[in-house]
Length: 485
Image 1: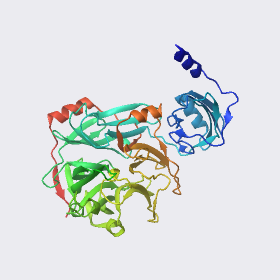
Image 2: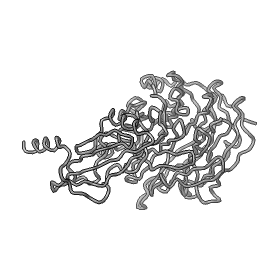
Image 3: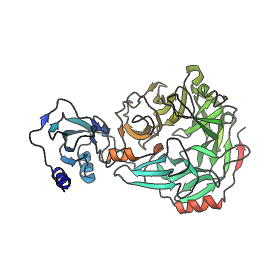
Image 4: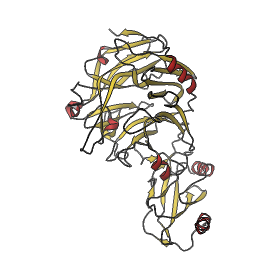
């Protein structure tokens, strides 16, 4: 009874009287101090990093007007009030004043800190991503999900409960357009899914010429073609080294599916004895970017896997390729590995991963994000977003002023999603962790890693029951192979 009345007392606390002033900003979780956000994003709820803090009182004032408060064990802002305040202060800032009640029963008031509201909108509906255990096991609750970034609502698209024992991967919308969607189901009854305007088509993209089905997908802007790599993925686990897992490929090539003619389009430069992986079309659809590495005796020579970043021409009118491939970044020459090229949709930048080795950067502790300016060819590390842990799996918003990426900076094991913005001059803002209603509880209890995140302009409408029927029915559209000469 005493604890109940104590809880009631603290839950009804109003603005603290005569708090002790602290000459530093508060240490909060997540670290949202000084981040830049879009108007209308879900509230950036936070708590004190010190778990011994009993109570918070937070006041937020906008530089262009407006105010709101929150009090409790964490700063839990009303969604409607928060979004209205961010809209009112677009291009300005929000000033946070935080008071915390310690174990000693004394209130402490910290120095104010800002959160900046960008003048760049983020009008996309949400994010899609796969949630999977950090050891990449099949079994449990592996699945593809989507999240409304303007609220805290998460929705399952396809999970293992619908297709037991199967691994689903590489879900890809067409440049944030959720009406055109592809995914690959691995395992018995697997197949390549193409969903167009809610209608599912299931292909068998494994042929004698391609060795395996498609994965690591990327759409051509016209929606007719989709590029895939076709590979065999393996993993090995370290013992006693401080590293956990190494992922590698025994073979890998790139192919393009023509969804009108049901043909797989192959080119000699994308089907070499080397390992070609991670295709991505340029915004105008005339170029395919990809990574390639010399074949090594993996896993024994795993440290020798050095990917170069290359490109080759593609002609959408007849589904043919250019004759040559150009190297943009030479991995063996620099003793580095360059992977996961993702061009911005406005044609200005390419974001990619750089690591000391590997064609699977999410498993590399030293994987960092880099930026190439397509106007000048200049490249640089994205110091504003990189950390001592893994940064990987990045994608652009529709207007190319926001990007999402996965990072293991919080604990070195679980990949979480962060968002940041970039302006026309390439200036990047401090990234912020994907907001959650009660962030400490949510992320402490979340036993999954996030990977392959992407923005969508609208919610993905997907019939998981139909997917279940199709997977276990095993009826697939056959494909023909056309080689580029």
